Length: 479
Ligand SMILES: C=Cc1c2[nH]c(c1C)Cc1[nH]c(c(CCC(=O)O)c1C)Cc1[nH]c(c(C)c1CCC(=O)O)Cc1[nH]c(c(C)c1C=C)C2
Image (tube, rainbow, N blue to C red):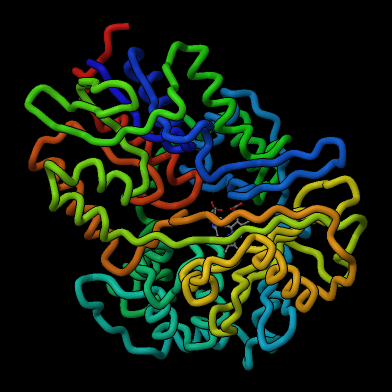
């Protein structure tokens, strides 16, 4: 059996890793660009002691998805930088709302005072949930905004849930499915008539049922250490790009062929497998695992399977502008923490600012990352502004919000087109239909990547693993 993986981002490389581990070789990964890593990109300035990340910078060590990633990180022997839960970057999260920087509560006591931008103590949101009637959602889904508003009130939807959705997928909570982040809470509300009621009943039931066993990856040294030392998140020496780079090296050392600058342009399915149209040749393989963005895969299957292509195109993506800024010395005198988010109701082009130098040591520099656009990219940047204009916009808001008067020493502007998929209402159903189509037509195609089963690093790695584990054992390659 021959297998090809499409895409050399973290998801495609992980698929390669799990395929190698389960079935051996031959195995080739085709990547369109001249590098691996996808949106994960770290720009190191070792001489000046800082680094810029234009994509994700940290990984959360929680749950099975977190433990699964750590199994790979441990095997690759990557040096990590842990941030414990007691660190300011883990505790202090802020909003910029109503013209001021507002610290979000970080302890149960914080639920009882009234702090801006909220007009009443947060515990009242729980009373709202206890008193609010439950509505059965049409087609088993609704937007996360409407769910939060129904259960906890409009302020929570505007100032807690909406900015959180921005910080995860740069999206509009009024469009994003409640099942994207609050699947469990939503199910509980639908079943028991309220979130708190549901949590209470579930806890009672759990006490009377047996707990699931420990997964092998939850026993890795790193996972146990993260539990013991109460890690909130971790990064990597040299930046997060070390992870895809090390994966590529590992795969190369084990004779997996990682071909760069070799995009697949078409997939032709037949009874014998699938033919890949590549840079210089057409190549028959038995099975393809695609980690490509949904819109890219849509183009590859359009000729033979227009309906599958159309379903894939129904998964929308947003553009995000990422501006990395270096100031010399400590310029964040007033605020310290992970960063701040700007609720969409503030109607600003800025989605949030990450205080990178509060998370990791940057040798005395202040390093900030400003995120802009997202679901509102067209509203603010449809005139395709130059990098200089984008930088000016980012700096204007940094000055206004953080009251920084210094001029930056070094900056970088990235516009990531179609970088984050949006799990809009009905996403789960859409993905189920896409997979059903593939099954019905017996296409030798598996799907992983951010478009389907979660947008985080942990999610895409676990999704790659599950797709490989779902292949039949008879699939074994002759090594
Ligand atoms: C390019 C912009 C990105 C935005 N979100 C993501 C990217 C790559 C992906 C992402 N970010 C977070 C999650 C949640 C789950 C997790 O794995 O931690 C996901 C899937 C949380 C998060 N949000 C921001 C940061 C720095 C993190 C920690 C993880 C990471 O390093 O990405 C800040 C942030 N991200 C985005 C915006 C608009 C924003 C605002 C400050 C979009």
